[in-house]
Length: 137
Image (tube, rainbow, N blue to C red):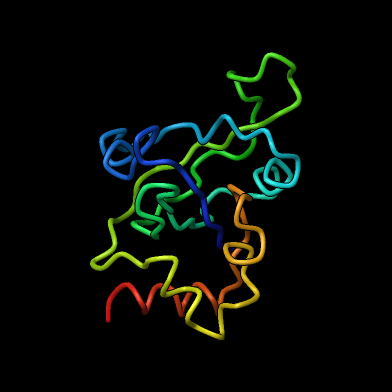
């Protein structure tokens, strides 16, 4: 299993909307950055993703699971980009603000800090555990 972080502006698609999508989940589409799209193509069924509210809040708020691997993004007229289907798993007990992530030296290598505009990024298992622990302590 791999771990990821997906960013969404909560006024466009929020963790609450993701939860309301139910067991069938919702497509994670609209990604037009080539590096982020490559990351979508690398996702596998069962992978877990932190759900990050960008712009408004700037914090990790929940977890979703990949339930369908890369398929053509219906919102892309060019046919070059893909989407994945994700299903809500949980809302974190305590959100993890970007400022707290930046303060943790063990997380300084994350794309969330180094490539702040990237919307789909891998998270190594050690960092996943640290971030998850930050959400329950």
